[in-house]
Image (cartoon, rainbow, N blue to C red):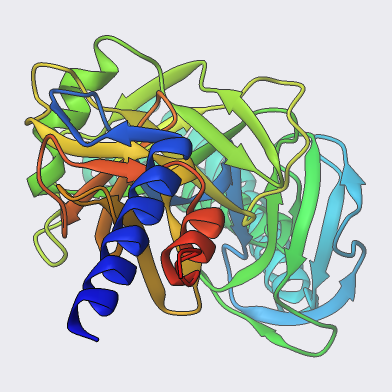
Amino acid sequence: MNIRNLVILMLGLGTAALAAAELGVAPVVQSAAAGVYVADATVQAVKQSIVSAQVPGRVVQLLVRAGDAVAVGQVIARLDDREWVAAEVSSQAAIFEAQANLARAELDFKRTQELSRRNFVSTAALDQAESQVKALRARVESLQATSRAAGATRSHAVITAPYAGLVAATQAEVGDMAMPGKPVVTLFEPGRLRVACYVPETRMESVRAGLAETPPVVEIGGQRVAGTQTTILPAADPGTRTTEIRIDLPDDVQAAPGQFARARFALSMAASPTRLSIPEAAILRRGELTAVYVVTSGGRLQQRQVRLGEALPDGRIEVLAGLKAGENVALDPVKAGIEAVAPPSGK
């Protein structure tokens, strides 16, 4: 009985070894492979503005909606300007009064000059008349400046587009109180887009080195495009310890500000440490299980759970734990799993 069991076991081992040999296998390789760092990004307009009121006032007209195209100087909204109109009219009236007083003072001054030449008035009276003219001229100039300021303030009640673009959003409605710095509409210039992402300081050195060799690739809505220009901001955020990187997009990219994107940075070979990697085809994924079938020294197939890292450019994937360099993995994990549990064919 013991001899019969031993023969069956040996036949089963031989069959498993033969099945492993028939499967395609690939070695676990340790090499310095340039990796890829992927960062979440947001699409931005290169030229985008939050248009707000320069003076406080109640919104009486809102002439645009989100998605509207506007021309430079086009009226976006109007504020209640009755108070400023009244102030401007009042200042104009004060100017007319001051000008009338100035005209009368100038006539008085001329008469005083004539009387002074005839020695009918004193020099002090002449000086007083001249001072009166100068004071009234200064008064007129001051009132004119006040009137110009009132006119400028009234003109601020009409909010216009600073450049041609599209309205991204409106943040005010008719009846709202507009205040300086409080957004009324958000405007952007279409056609010039970029993505902004934030890279942690632990990755910045390898990302910088990779950018010197390869431009970043941006994924937006299922399409991949190469960035036309990359800008790394000189200062990091002290709160998050990240650095903002902006990548300009080609003009023909179909995207909208605020859209989600991913920025893929190829890491430099020199900055990349050696890493274990296997072909992506060898990986078995079942729910939360990530495993491969390893060919043991006896030729059998053994399932082993692994922890994976980054995807590498050559179709391989980094292995962080579970394998050693030189081991062989089956390239068809489904078939390997069938072979691993199949009963031996010997009797």
